[in-house]
Image (cartoon, rainbow, N blue to C red; front, side):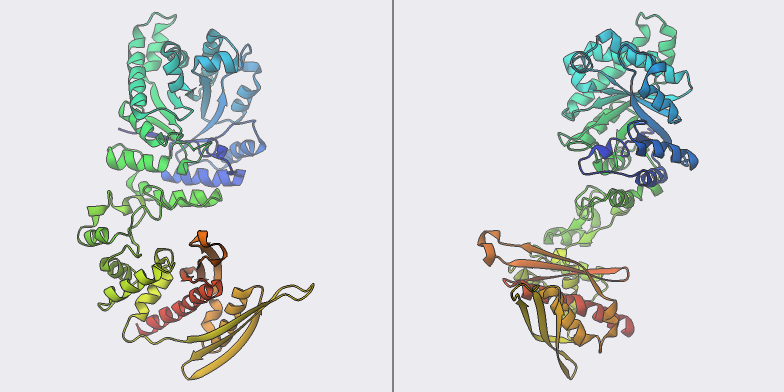
Length: 540
């Protein structure tokens, strides 16, 4: 069955605390969604802010390939008319092929929030839908608070749907606005709604022919929130009961705990239930899309996100890795490539020899049967605070140093770092190091903005005459984490350094009760690794 994807990242998603998208950001995401194969893209609430107005104007200038753009707004105000309603006027001015109208389904919200009558609410829904249908628009009706309203007064919530359907709505979307429903409740209520709409052709109403015609072409949609961590499960329950449009956001962005995450939903519907959402090629772009949208939103990707997170197919336990080495799908529910992800083997104190061998193979390294020795070093160092799954560069150095023909390109013999504060003068840092390269022994000193900067500068000062290529290596990130916080200032710090050369990046680690020594360990690995990689390329 074809499932139609309705994305509301650009509106509902931006209601996430700390998330703000410029008009340019919204356009970038819209084009990405179009490439993914999303069928409807909700651009925003016209008239609510200048950015949304700019988005609707610019998206008309460079149309999407296949997705339809929807403008979102509420039904007309109580006691008014569509012709004189500012919100309705803004929806008209957006000039979108699709208009999404939100209306009240719950008696509670009609009487105590809108403070109007139940009959007037029905008229607001019918008038607004009919107004846009007369303009030739495709109308999606969002029945807000539908599931909570159904539990309070099922008869009235069904009357609100009847009003929208009778006025010609193309899609009736059942909204779990507060995100508190359970999958069995969603399934039961969606089933009841379908039965009602089918039977409603026989109800005695003013124009039964019009309503019957509308119901014949009517689609059911589902819009869920994640307050109970069930948004995806609830949406899937609705689809299994006949919903054919699903509303959600990329990465589950949204207010409070977020909206339903379209990423796992698409994968589940297509790979697990056999529904058609996007093409296989588009499905393989899910991971890329999730990360690019996060980057545009200036948010860190969730590394543990199902299907698309960096750790979604990461294997750490020794038993697991031993199994996937024989049968890859023994510990993987799908082939990661189907969603554009990949298997990763992580090494840690929980690893077995298979982890070491497989990770080394992925790096193009030969362990020469030293898996046990490398694993023992990992276990010993992690007991002292190292964490190799976060520092694959230092793991690579362990493997390289285990080779019988390993020859260090340099040796850091000793160092001294002083930090001085005299009177009103600024704090100064000075580092001196003793470094051996072959038969050359060098003593160098350098100042820095801090002790680690000074140490890095002194080491480079000694090495650059011998290895000028290290000038291209730069430190791009430096993180410190305290391992045993309960020890206060005597706690052991763990230092993680990320280095780069062009587009190539690697992370190295150090751990010691002395933060300077921990930094020294990580710096050593960060500078030696690119030299060994370069030597390997030359010998090949």
